[in-house]
Length: 248
Image 1 (cartoon, rainbow, N blue to C red):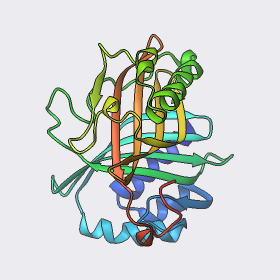
Image 2: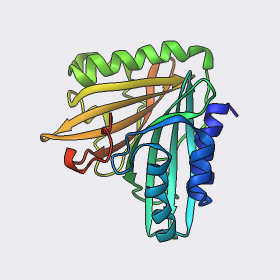
Image 3: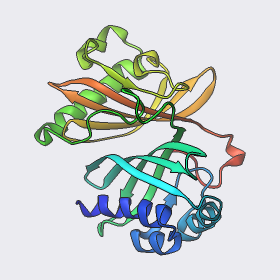
Image 4: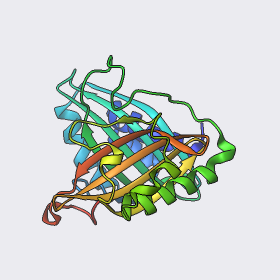
């Protein structure tokens, strides 16, 4: 496993699933740990202050990484969490920045309730898992960069077919998050795009009915066009509720 991905995964598995918050965040983060999950303060102590009470409240934690993307210094993971035997089920999408020693130095996330059942044919985490076509990484990132700019931000609906195979497109979205093509023109900031092979991730700000949302879109491409997308969206809380610099 890529060492950057290993550190990000271990922070989840050892720190949260296994309940060793202080040990994991100390071991797998670098000289700084800048946090963008708005309820968690920066640094090791901020992580510990948030997660140690969480671990006490939630003694049963089933956490699984479904998909991951590594692109240079950045790591993305898509995670399923089942807390206290179904009391809460979440899909968490996380972006990590790392230093030259592969340690985590910054973190962005979006958390949404898991809708439906794991046995459903189509849910927020279903679909292919592996990475293919690693030689096409940069070409696929260019497709998504152009899609996000031309269509999702500028609203040029006539260009959708340039980037998306609309006949084959599979959407994986929770009930409170609109499918990709229903959000055209709602994106006002595309903060980061990373990719690995046929998987490309975009982290964006979406504005709906005057409310700001943070959203990850994970795209699967085939033959240069999008054929599948997993969306995960979270309302951005009011600024006075933030304990750090905010979602972006």
